[in-house]
Image 1 (tube, rainbow, N blue to C red):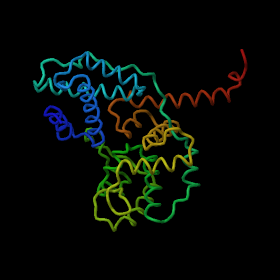
Image 2: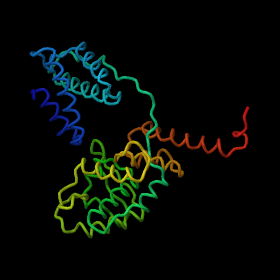
Image 3: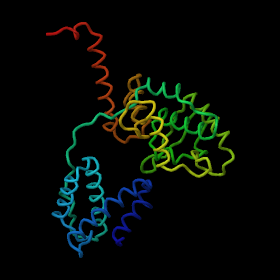
Image 4: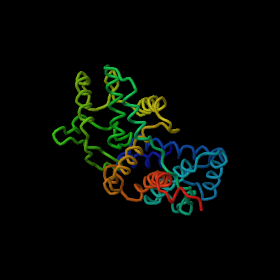
Length: 296
């Protein structure tokens, strides 16, 4: 790994304090670009890359049928890297400055219907073992709080406050927020803690051996339960975040309240949930209003 890349990754980890998942994504993107450069020229390097080489790499990514979202993330990684180098005078010209993200069509986020989530908790058999109690709690927690996977994995026992029925969450850029916990969730947390007390670790969610739960374990767990109980095509922890937001909106919560609960910086990030709610309301209107049922 080059000195420039190491410097940038250290900046992200120790100054920006990005999550391990984000740090890995940046590192992967930049190393992929470095490999592309070396394939074209053995003497090529990240610090000497030019605009034309970046455009060629983006074009090659598009040829491999990678998603627009994935390509845009890689472009963003490059732009952040070269901005850092320029700021520290490691390069004189930023080759990514005129590189723009690829336009993407607006996509309505998938979510699990409230009826399907109710069915999951009603029909799924969660036994009284540590794993069964933990799995049910995780699903209830993601759906009941809208936390990101990285936030859930970072929660410590001391972040719980049963007196106020709330929990402290550390979000993106180390921004703290307080999320209320509904009564069922509080009861499940207390039950889980009675199983977990044998483990000497600060992390709230752990494996059956007491080690902190990792992202791939969380993803596998959520995917398994959603696969047998829901109809959504994407089955990840983030789908339950979308489900939380959509359910809140459909039951009368304001966009500003949902924004605060999700930890969004801008309201525009929260407004994507109005599309799925509007689509549902249009369907209800079409079925229920007598004028909507008449043909012109």
